[in-house]
Length: 152
Image (cartoon, rainbow, N blue to C red; front, side, top):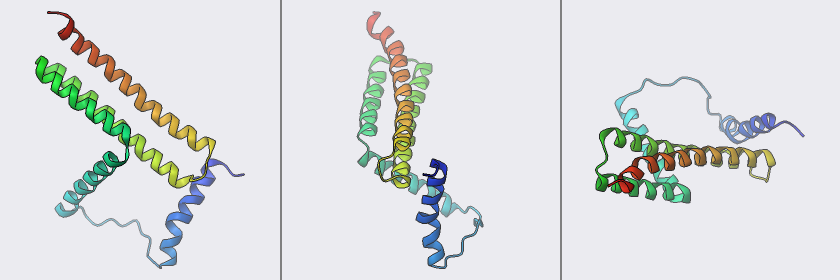
């Protein structure tokens, strides 16, 4: 049994490079210069990725609904400019972490479609990162909103 590194490399070679070689597609490292069309196209791809993640990932939808509620509560409580900045950073970090977690999970599923302890560990660790950020965001939210709600 090979190491996880060998397994990953083997899967990448068989899944990506062999079909290209079989179809006689020239593999090069040349990248054409970035044009405005390609630049704006990259935003389109990012938007497609966000829509895909929202459609497939229940936790991302949950975090998005909570973020929307936090924004509404922030307007209602008229929090300060600095508090808004903190809230926006927290929302952005949690949503981004959830997107990274989703991408890692999809990648692990491609590399290791069968049940694998190490693959499961990778998924658990990336999910733990989201959990830590979400807990931090809740604590920060309690600090910001707690003083507004509890103190008259």
